[in-house]
Image (cartoon, rainbow, N blue to C red; front, side, top):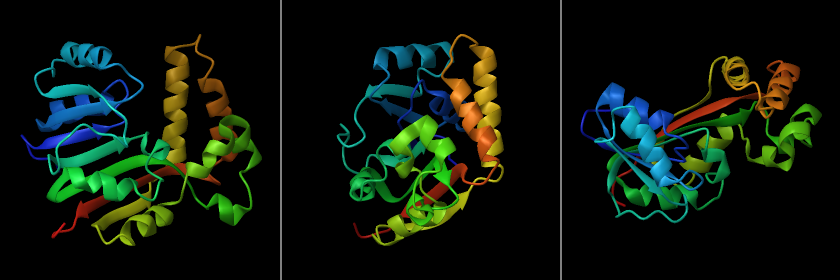
Length: 212
């Protein structure tokens, strides 16, 4: 559980929902970094949420972060890690910014089987996300990808229980909130057609090893 006052990097923070939650619920200091959302836009969200004094918005690419080494106690990423985290050099790069014993954790769309094991992307998934689904890996893939570096100790790597169901509930809520935004309908259809066969969310956490 995060301790009040620690410094957390929210990587791929989007409009800042995770950053607001961390600041409100745990009293941590958050740096919200995202490339696609302007820092000014995110800062306005944090100010409106009453956490502007605890959350700093930064516009930055995940592979070119403007921070000093060992400047964070934790790095988190929710529904964004699939866009940059599958590169072999991503973890070695990110751990530079963690203090000794610092923690890293993410939640990302996942598959129950590797696309390579299936021999291709299932049609109902390919229809919606195309080739990008090759970045949706299993929890066991993530465990090996991180453990083999010996830079971290993986403390958990698992599929979220009822992850597909929760993803579907979220997509339906978004569609109901913004009925004119048609982007959610294909996702709802994909998740409904999947029925829990292939799709879910991977939850992975690790602790930086010493001596680096």
